[in-house]
Amino acid sequence: MPRRTRVAVTYRVIWHWRLPIFQRLAADPAYEMCVFHGADFPGTKTVNAKRIEGVPHRQLFTLRFLSRMGLPEWPLCPTLIWRLWRFRPDVILAEGNSNLVNNILTFCYATLTRTPVVFWTLGELKGEQKQGIVNRVYRRVTRWMEQHSAALLGYSSRALDYFQRNGYPTEKQFRAVNVVDTDAIPPRVAAAADQVGPLRTSLKLDDKQVVLFVGAIIPQKRMEDLVDAFEIVRRAQPNSHLLIVGDGPYLPTLREYIAKSEARADVSTVGKVVEGVSAYFLLGDVLVLPHLGGLAISEALAHGIPVIATNADGCEEDLIVDGYDGYLVPVGQPTALADRILSLLSDPQLLAEMKTNALQMIAERHNVHTYLGGIKDAIDYAAKKNASH
Image (tube, rainbow, N blue to C red; front, side, top):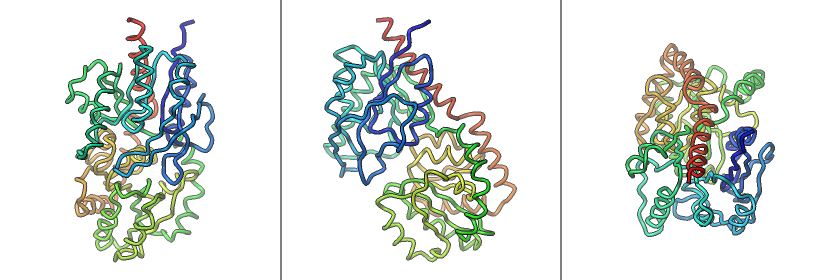
């Protein structure tokens, strides 16, 4: 029997939406895996899943650094090198840009032991070129890590473009389009079927066309653009309603903005929903992401909901084929958002076609199996490269 590849995964936290992919990787007999992660950042979305089952993992002592510069929450786990030394991985699968401080420790260990690293990254957000000394240092350190990784694993085709622009060898580039556990959604849809009618009534959405948003409520999402776009939509389609599902530090500010909108009577904010969110997706006619986000796209498509998005994490360019299962519009243009929303709400036949196409996109092109396949390809490449040295 071939020896199992020992894989150490280094991650800030084990998010509830990342847990399924780790469970599938851990269940694969080709790998012996352990996730080394930090503790929660209270008051942020950087928190571990409530129940972590089916994944060997170690939560490490964590020093927390809250960013005030538009960068992620950064943990420092001082015992990470020691934990890696005890585990002795064949390959390290490292969360990319967002785990910069721990990655410095990871690469110290990898360099000393000649352990190959798979750098799992979104590459670079479209239009994001922050200035300042901290961001310059951040980019230089990240670039060094990319250069010294055995394999680069991108969230999207945009990440592959980023790798190409920076001259990295093509053979070390891999793509795993970022999606939710798409296999888990059909059972959730079946379980939610009886909930949709009562939920629609309780939210006073009977006979309404529902424009949906699902995700964290943070300033970077440009939620005001969505509210402004919906004002335009409601003038043309008075039976429309904007349903916002999600929580975050910016929610009180957003609610104040909604209260000043002429469309406020037809805008609802229901807070964070994890268990039972399928019922809310099934209420929607179209999902709209005014900026950033990513996993909500695949989740909506898997529920048969077309998506209108601007710049997300790059996966929108793989998951949304313009005019097939949704639309891509420029960021910061509420009128363009409104035009695309109205094109669907005013054309029942087009909306029905796009709902069918949304399901086909997940079934045929990008799903949890293609996602896991890309991750495995990168790990196997790094392991073989290491074995040949």
